[in-house]
Structure formats: C-alpha cells, structure tokens
Image 1 (cartoon, helix red, strand yellow):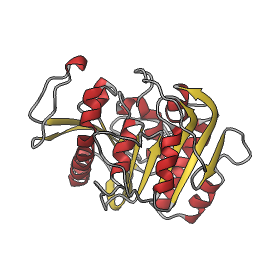
Image 2 (cartoon, rainbow, N blue to C red):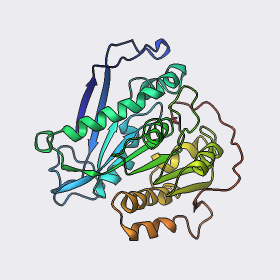
Image 3 (tube, one colour):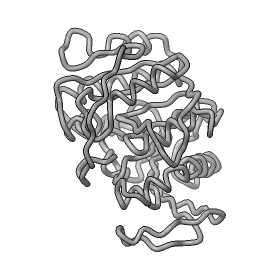
Image 4 (cartoon, one colour):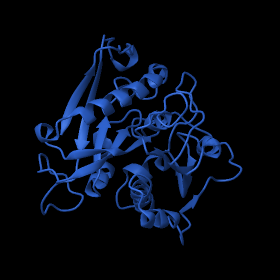
Length: 300
C-alpha cells in the first residue's frame, strides 16, 4: 500500500543540482508493508493481500540517501512477515539527491517528516486503507545511514518522541553539522555497523553508542569492506552478513518492542561462533574510520 502524505505547513527547499524545485509543501510518499492473512509464502510480497487480523506493532523506516522503500524491500518485507506493519517514507530532498549540501541542510526537517508520517499512519482507518490495525503502544523507528540519523533523533533530547519504544540504527550517520543534534540519546537502541564501512564511520557510531543510555547493543560486522560494507548487511540477500544482521534486527524488535525475553536472549547470541560479527554493549576504544563520498549504489 502506498500513500502520499502532504505537509502543507512546511516547505521544500530547491536543490538545483538534483533537479528539485522549491515548493510550499512537503510531499512524503510512504509505502506500507504489512502481515497478510492466509497461506501466502512467508516473506513474499503480494500487492493488496488481505491484511492479517488483530493489532500489529509498527516500524517507521527512514531510508538512506539516495534511497527509497523499494531499495530496502527485502528487509522490510521480512519485518512484515514477522508481524510488523512497516511504514517506509521517502524524503523530499535526500531520497532523490543523495547526500549533497542541500540534503545535509534539510536533514533536521526529516525528523519532522518522520513525525508527520507517523501521525498520519496512526490516523488511517485500517479497513479503508487495506492494512491491519496498528498497535500504537508498540512502535519502533529504524533508519539506514542518512535515515539512521533521523531515527536516532526520535530518541534524542532534541526531538524525542515518546511513542517510540526502540530504535534500529543501521550504519547510521551520527555526526551532523546542521542538526538534528544527537545528544542525550536513550535506548533501547541496536546499532548495526560494519567496522570497515567507508561511507559512514563505525568509530563515530561507537562514540554515540558509548554516550547512549541503556539498554543498548552494538552489532559489529567484520571482514566486509568499503562501500559494500555500508549496504550488504541491510540490502543484501543470501549472503553471510545479512544472514546474521537480519535475524538480530528481528530479535531486537521482538525483544524490546514486544518485550519477549526469548528474543532478547537470542539477540545476545548474534554472531556467536563466527568471525564475521560480534555483539557487545558498545565496542571499546573506537578508532576513526576514513569515509568517502558514497555513490548512488550506496545510500547514505
């Protein structure tokens, strides 16, 4: 299900280099993935499938830059298959332009975009929208890279939203010049980040983790390098990295949004017995990781 929510009270700035014209409003296309009723294959995407009965927890997903829900579809469908309604939005600047100057300047506005979309999704009539009922007492925010900063802002002093129970920060940008200020961040938060990510610094994410109030966990992905390290654990399918990262994300959601102790116990074992991932409360003594300007194949 796709809906375009329009915030008429806030403007979209121009980004000439990306062909984006200034507008007096912000258009926020949002794709909603949901658990379906019946005998559909688990993890399959079936448009207009009958929604599952009962109330379901919500994940508000913020994509990287550039990035759209379709780029993350395999991941988001997997969350839906585990019982979550997932509302994935597109941002007016960063989803199209990539992490250019205009996108960085617009980054603080993305927090208000996310909050606006959350309001509108919760206001939907499930029957008319063709989605399951949403359990508004169980909500997570998630974001990759550029969108990770937006998700983290919802658990930070600047912009905390008390409706958010937990945050998934996936290779998240954690240092912002124009904002939002990611300070006094509070858990539950799961950081997932490759040590050798060259698009967004692992060390900077570790530094924020160390300042974040518990509960918090940090899943470090090892071995994979460069820009591949920034995307494969999240956008990949059938590889050894996403095979560890994805179940850990579901266990975190189940454990901290739905308060399932068994899921928390499974999360603590993420990466155990392998050389390619390890879970800690926060890694110690991070070293700065050099970054490069990501390409369109590597959302930031």
